Amino acid sequence: MTDTTIAASVLDKEQLRDLVADVLDLDVTEVTDEAHFVDDLDVDSLMALEITVRLEKEYGVKLQETELAAITSLRGTYELLDRKLRDAQ
Image (cartoon, rainbow, N blue to C red):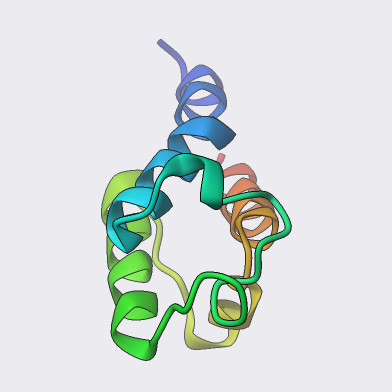
């Protein structure tokens, strides 16, 4: 399996949705693309940190403090990870 194949298969939006739902202890149907983590899903700073740690571990990326502002919804998180994985290739 090539790096391109790995990145394409690793960054599956439904797997990402499952990961976020697991961290937040929510049903996956509640983690919509547009649901704002803080306003809609009641994510606090500890939960946000846990999401970040799980993302770094699961996807093998290092998220910089300046990039964390993108992690406000599933869509923003997906776009950030997609960019990080593409840049790593």
